[in-house]
Each structure stands twice: as structure tokens, then as C-alpha cells.
Amino acid sequence: MRVAIAGAGAVGRSIARELIEKKHDVLLVDKDPVKITPHRIPGATWLLGDACEVANLEEARLEDCDVVVGATGDDKVNLVVSLLAKTEFAVRRVVARINHPSNEWLFTEAWGVDVAVSTPRVLASLVEEAFEVGDVVRLFGIRQGQANLVELTLPEDAPCSGSPVRDLTLPKDTTLVGIIRGRRVVTPTPDEPLEAGDELLFVALPEAEDALRRAFLPVAT
Image (cartoon, rainbow, N blue to C red; front, side, top):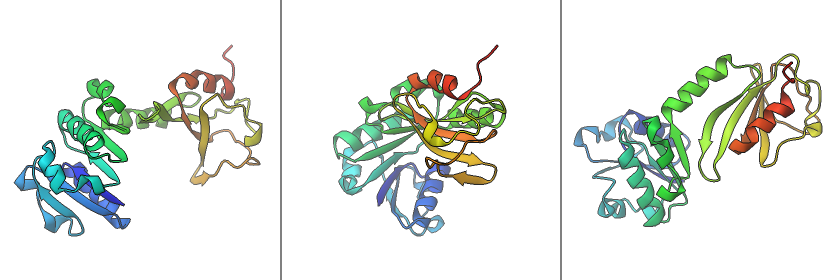
């Protein structure tokens, strides 16, 4: 897979290292000469230039990329890169970093964004997830289709505790994708019984979250 990353700061370099370790072809683009440091990530290709300029993206052969990542610290830059990648170069998948939560509403398909990652929201979700038992917590937004990765930890009195996955009645447009049980990751096969304390991971539309609560949590008295 060929991946272009706009922004060679700490975030962009970290993404590049992870992808290179997994044998992907990575290009880092940044207009700041100080950040162009090939010796820090020898396996990457580097390009000095403004990722908001079409000429630089043409030099980067963005049309040959499977994924483009807008990873700069400037939301405006990440949006422009996303729009150009999708509309000018027909990149199949565009991922954009959101630095300021107030800008989340902009990171949609209209700007070419397939997946938007809000660092503040992810951190807040992880804090919630650590303490919330018996409620739906959004972990990650998948902008294409407006779905979310959500987590629900089954309390002791969950009505579905002990039931196999096959007996679950899931809301429309909702899929159970994983079960975290202690230190194990369990595949949700039809025969797998649910246990109190299980962390259930779903891909669901926002409007399905209330139905998830009703299906998996005890009725408040």
C-alpha cells in the first residue's frame, strides 16, 4: 500500500514509522525544511513542499496513493489536502486529523474526508471508557456513512448476560465487531456467550445508540 502523509511533525512521523514497520510505502510531505529529516525515518520517502499546492501533490504522484493522511497541526491544511486528494487525484481513502473539536463538523465527505480522527475526542472517549460501565461510549467516528465505533461494557445485571451472540437482537445498521474480555480479544461467533464485564465493540449509526442501550442494559427503575 502506498500512503502519503501531509505533515512531518511528531504525529506524521509516528504514523509513518508504524506503516513502514508493516511494510507499506510511505511518503512524508512538509513545507518546513526543519521537519524534513530523512535520517529519522530511513524507510520513508520525503518531499519538501506545501501539500496544499497541486503542483507539489503532482510531484508526489498522489494519484498512485491508496491512502492520503492529513496529519498537520492546522485543520485548514488538513481539509484542503483532503479535498485535493479526493477531487483532483481520486484517492480511494482519505484520513484527516482534527486538532480542534469545534471544527469537527467540517470534516465530512463534502471536504473529501473518509475518516476523521479527533485527538481530543479520542482521549476524552478513552477516559470515559475507563470508568463508564453500562453506557454507550463513542470511541471513533467513521465519517463515510456517518457511523461510529462505540463501546458498551456489560454490567452485572445486563439482561443479555449468558446469552449467545446468535440470540442478540441488534438495532438496524449495527454490527458487533469484537468482544474484549479481560486480557483477551474474543471473536463474536454465533455460539459465544456474553459475560458480565465484557466490553462490546460495535460499528453503529448514531441513531442506533439508544436502541443499543435498550437492548443490552437493564431497565432503570
